[in-house]
Amino acid sequence: MRTSPSRLASFQPRLWQDLRTYDKVRLAKDVGAGVTVGIVALPLAMAFAIASGLPPEAGLWTAIIAGFLISFFGGVSVQIGGPAGAFIVIVYGIVQQYGVANLLIATSCAGLVLFLMGLFKLGTLVRYVPISIIIGFTNGIAVLIALSQLRDWMGLAIPKMPADFFRVLQALWQHLDTFNPYAFGLGVLCIGGLALWPRLWAVDSQFRRQLEGIDTVSALKATSRVPAPVVALVTLSLLAWWFKMPVETIGTRFGGIPQGLPAMSLPDVSWTSAKQLFNPILTIAMLGAIESLLCARVADQLGDHAQHNPNQELMAQGIANAVVPFFGGMPATGTIARTVTNIRSGATSPVAGIVHAGTLMLVVLVAAPLAMHIPLAVLSGVLLFVAWNMGEWREFARMRQFSAHYRLMMLTTFFVTVIFDLTVAVELGLALAFVLFVRRQSAIFRADPQPSHAPNELHFKLYGTLFFGAADKLDRVIDAVEQAAAGTLVVLDARQLISLDTTGLDALEQLHRAVSKRGGRLRMTHLNDQPRSLIERAGFAEHVGLERNQVFATAPVGD
Image (cartoon, rainbow, N blue to C red; front, top):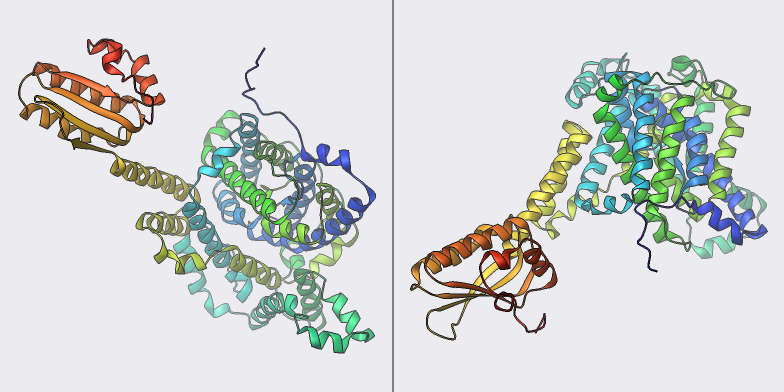
């Protein structure tokens, strides 16, 4: 007996599948990749938390706990989860407007929403978000991240940064007289080092052969493989400490990072607070879903592992975001930069992501006191570099190659993200995409007159989709009927009619009434499956008073 497919997604983490064929060779690769990406994640996790208005340990423990859960339960073999740059603006705005306690509630509720999205197989719907909207809000977020880091990058003495775009510009302008050249110098050195470090040994192959065998060169070559953010953090922190530069550090602002496991606490959740946080919850859930599945698609393109399971990945993201608030964490999602690093370091399974979380936890438990010496200007430099790499700036130059619809959606989403709010930007972008799609589809539908085979007959051929956006185009057929002789037979050739909705059906009924009023008959031929099914279910054949074989042609579809 044939069984119908389940409406709920099955819970099948990719880790459980990969372990069936696991061996020592893959373990060695995963451990190496996990340690590497764990080191890369260290400065980013702290920087993302600080930029979001949270203490650095919030980002570190989010990277550890969420990173572990996303790898353990996720639907992607090599994805790395944790705090992401895309959340900085959202989290900072929520903290400023609702407070940290409500951020934890919103994150946990968003985790529940993400899990339900995966459970009810809504993972594939994220793919329907137009790429122009994704590029628009991604570039907008990158601009806001860069703008939020200018205070620490230039060492400006601004007690509290506002969340509004124009107020941020105003605050920066009003405090330019507090410019700190030491902080600015560290920030510039950080960005320069991040850009140049990967190219340190990108020299010509002949020169490499000439240097081969020299111990000093070999040592430097090995050193150049250390992640650039780590090099920047260590060297510039030592520089600032050695010369006793008057710059703000993690220690001076936050008092350092606690050396120990975070205490578990339960957020005070109530129905009243949940209703108040509806928009933040929806924003965190939607952004987390979009970012994680975009990251999963990038991982599929770069790796040779099995394709990702979007529904399982959303369930894993939901579990992670539901749990991390109990340990003072922040929203988490899939992170493209760390996932790419993981793949290029040789990762083969989610074990690498678990090792990455373990590496981070070991560093936090052992070396947390050293973090108090890290200048905030250096972390701002790291985030400015992240913002630059995050934005797809070339798409602005390529806009001329695309349609006016594409440009309108991308620019609208970009400017609304920067000036107003990401939630409004995505909602407006999707609404605009819907309107433009309806307009485009309505332009495709036509009802073209055809030569008549006999007197007192009108023939029309239907093309495209007869739906609510194109139903008014049947008015020209009604006009032709009213000008024709009484008793005219109207024949609609529907072989090119792709689909029909209830508004289109109502337009056909109006046409039938106009034909019947003048004593004529309406006939449709060569109907495809979907229009035929709707007409049958709506009882339109019986309603027009014609026999079935008069309404539907006996010729096969596509004849």
